[in-house]
Length: 150
Image (cartoon, rainbow, N blue to C red):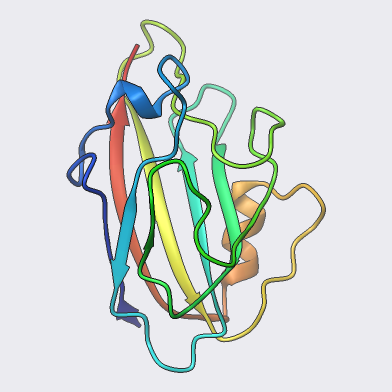
């Protein structure tokens, strides 16, 4: 499978996510850029999840239907053409890092998939449901990991 380059000017891979993008800060989504989306992509799907959450993997952001010709999203903005879904805080769109105080650093996986066809999802999908739904539809993927602690 082809690899998509996924980056942010706000933080490096495996580095701390700035407080501005957290639930303690301004809670705005970080800027993201991507490249190497393959020809034949029907849509891009963006997921941000925290696998270190005490209750299981926590969904921070899910955007489907992103324009495959796009190359990123500005800070605080939905990716071009994308549809945002409810996050684990029961709000639409981005929900920034907010791990329990003293729980140590959590990892936040930003994943971008290039899909061959539209993604069928239930009304309120979990991160696990997204992973199951992309199987067999992915043409390429990329990941960026940020950390955050309180």
